[in-house]
Length: 261
Image (cartoon, rainbow, N blue to C red; front, side, top):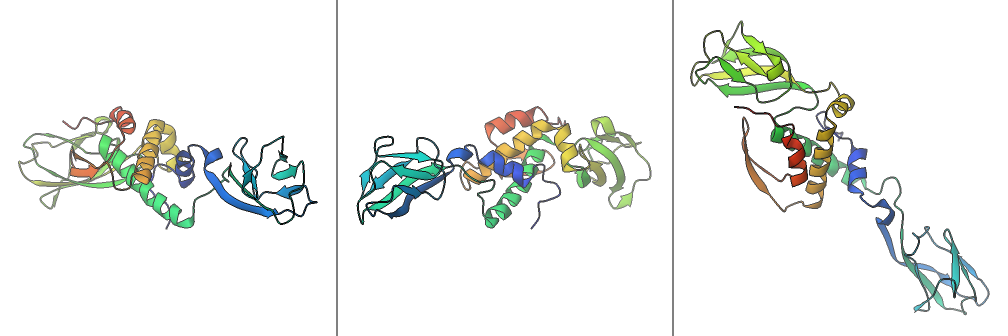
């Protein structure tokens, strides 16, 4: 699976956001280093420990740095060689590599990024990456109808109860279309239009950087709280939807929210 075309953030951006403290993201709990022979002073760890996290044991006895041993990168040098047949073990934290996620994590994160983008768009009534929208509304008996997604780039077609409308007025800057008479009450109106900030992900990110932060916050919340903190909210043009939006993300999205009245 590849990342959805509507996804506002990349897989790399999501991973970097989730790895809040990469330096302490991996832990070795019981690494077997070797067995003493009464002669060898140096032993190598599999990774370079983060300073202050190493706990070194000889025959289950904790060793003290500078008194019992010294360490340079991943090499331990004992002051006195461990005795014959004495096991040497260690636990420590070490810095994560560029990518500590497995392939199955990638698939899950791609789905979460797409979901987070949709949640953010629905929450503020915006479209981030330009795409065609097919929207159904009900006639309201007035001449004015506001489209649910902003910013509107172009209105392609309007059908009223299955009949194409040949002409209409529009104010794309505020996302409104105007009937020359009225939008007949309770009629089914299908509007096809293009909305969005940028033609691609990079362009959209440059134009609405605050939305990028909001989407990353939602991704992290979905990733870390898979089944908790569900919230129900009514979104104009969508109905009642159930999801969780972190308060920090909602504050950001409120700045972009479209007034649909």
